[in-house]
Image (cartoon, rainbow, N blue to C red; front, top):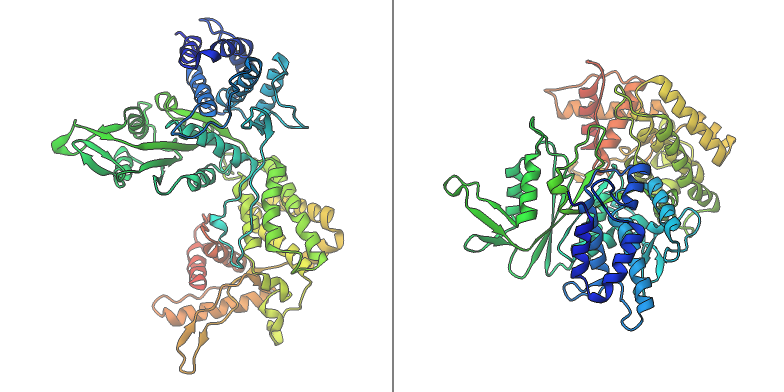
Length: 602
């Protein structure tokens, strides 16, 4: 009932005395005062003009803003603060304090806004007083800036990423820092060092988990343990307790904790996933709240039920999807324990930078000709262009609920390109270029192979998700238009006349003179030739399967569609973290093709 003003005043009185009047004046200037009928000018603007991705109470947001202010200006765990306040210059002190306050209310109060609403809030703050706001470039806001040690505004720059010096790229575990992840890590560090809990909210593919893992890499291994707990709709309170207790040791009496001299940070991924029961409660998250709020939970053993187990030296952080559209929110009593901010989708510049760095690392200028490098420079923008068309036009419906094209789909296109070995390009298409007779394919220039590989991966990631011919035809039209626009009409005609079918099952096992297996065939992603050539390969594997498994032989008729489906499944099985949901009427070959694809993939 008192709203946020008394809370803010109480926190100000705990700050150093020389900050009191400055903080009171900037709060009155930017946030106003709350009353039973008015929430204050800033909250009133947000309520009328913006739509936060998650509902949050005003008191909790104000607490979060002051937590961020404390992290910027105060000493925690003997670490110097990121911003040093001048001691002997009251005017400079007031300026730096106002800048710090603006930064903290932008993230503490406006952190749950999306990109468009952040621009609105930035414009509103400048309308109140532009004196202490950062001088921004075009399409930049206060969210692209932070305060350096001297209290001056500085634009965020991600650390330079170095491409791993290896031919076989571990794409699934690749973490490339961006401006979004860099500033998110800074917010998490600032809150975490105060032993408070940050919560990342965002759509799928906004790098919540990747950001948490990158933050984990910054923690000292000697004193801080790391643990990730993944929630699902089936997660029960006992399962969560067991996951936490697995890393705890008894410290005496009813006290438990990590090994002596260490703390532990627990990252709870998809914290909003547990089921809501018929009374509207998320009982699993109530156990999470108890542990955060009271640093312990009750024993559940039958003979000690009701006794309290104290858990020391644990810290928490969490990630969750944006509520709405069938996705849960978390209880308000749990929500108030967190500093909450929205992980927005990376800008086009950031996306271009991420995959541009990867492609430039994979295809260095010293190893490839100018024609191929010209294709490399355009691939990222072309993929984003096609991805944007699909996001804007192919919208989810009840019958097409899976029509969601997020950052994960974009990354899968580049995953297929980057997992293709350089030898495929250098050999002009792969091992079939050195074969004789009907198995042989003609060598092709590297730039043409790369472009066909790109189209093949786009078809596998985007095209295979579509469920009817009109949608597939529309997607094919967009792919043709993007290819012609960026690479030329002649190139597109060649891609249509001689499409690429990429496979990874053309190499042979190596045997010695006694027919003993020395080495299994390597999985090299390369051109498989025409459909008749690929069919011959598939029939060879089916024959080998029947010899190895005489009890369950397969006699499949591999017509063109079945053949394409077979190698789609095979590609997914061989991709790191590959998965597929096969949808079709009974008897359409889902089980048989999967068995044969699994045999080919070993």
